[in-house]
Length: 203
Image (cartoon, rainbow, N blue to C red):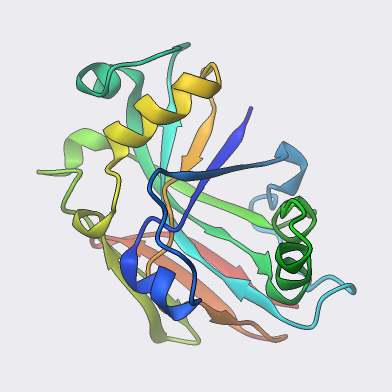
């Protein structure tokens, strides 16, 4: 199982972190050991004082594919989901300043939340899906897949140019604006359209 993440795929999020707008998708990988086990609390790691939540729409790949044309991309997934890409922002900033990879800031144990899956047939248009993250019952992130710079099928085509996609691989499609710090006792809830797909307690 590969966890393939797309960075800087929503303009407002690019602006809030003062990042440069990319001319092609920003891609990075998280190890499968970063997946937070179901029903387990998230423990803030000792090496960071500034862990941020980043809610994202997920796509689960259902069969092997390489060099997939975007028009055929829908044949490679049936399910969409919602998750969190936890990021040690302080560590990431230090790594970025030195031109080093981000993996330590995004791929640590527990940094990947994968919620429940929903069949794509339940949505009228996958390029117009609302989603949100609440922290302690307050909405902190709100997005819609229509605002993606690169849509789901385009991402699958692009990623498959570099990596063979296999059954069970998960693509994190990017986060909208509103990312922020977590502290112990925070309670996070992710909703895709009207379906609650995950809850996470912060320790």
